[in-house]
Length: 254
Image 1 (cartoon, rainbow, N blue to C red):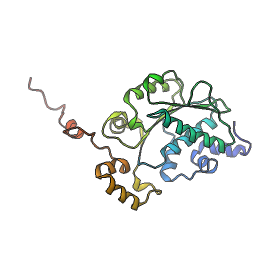
Image 2: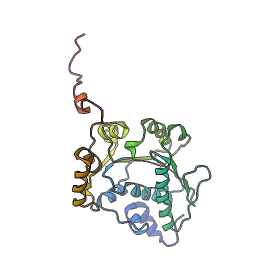
Image 3: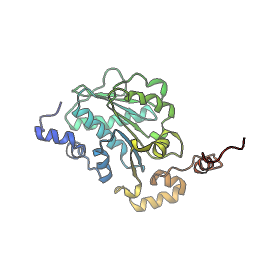
Image 4: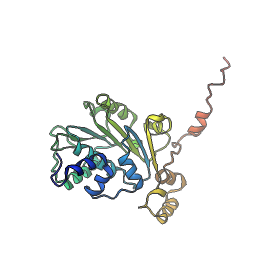
């Protein structure tokens, strides 16, 4: 249910312009790349971003927009741990408060928010054995996706089978492994990809990045701040070298 503070024209405008809603009603000031994410409307979105870009905050705002304007929607948030999912919903609850909504739990799930219009948001922990049972999910956000196990990703994808829900994978890279890397590198045109290194984040200074590069070392710095997928540790050969060694054009000897 939309609050009385909005005229009918404003309600329609906010419904079709999430970035404006986030700016004017939630009190945030998205930068250019954050506005692009909010307005993308992608059914399948991949966000590869620097640390401290604000992905969890923007994703929580996007989820609140969906729950606020669309009745009886189910929004699922998946994170590597229950604590992280709880933090995500804490941000969403804060945004709901700015809209004059006292969101409560849904009565069935420990980490959840129920909106007056029947929409609900559920946060899931990083365990494949405890996440089954959801259907007709309108929006699913997988936060810190590079740290979420592949089996959990496979367990939650069927939530979108009925209803044509949207899926966003958001993360800083964690090596050339796992579903986040595979979808980014090989997922094809069905994904809208966004890459936001720290050099494009106006809130991170050049001086800080220089300090981090010196403290962390080049490889770790490029992963955490420049969105680069480095080779996983413990491998004698790089992943690119291994994949490049195979060719369909060379016939086996036997």
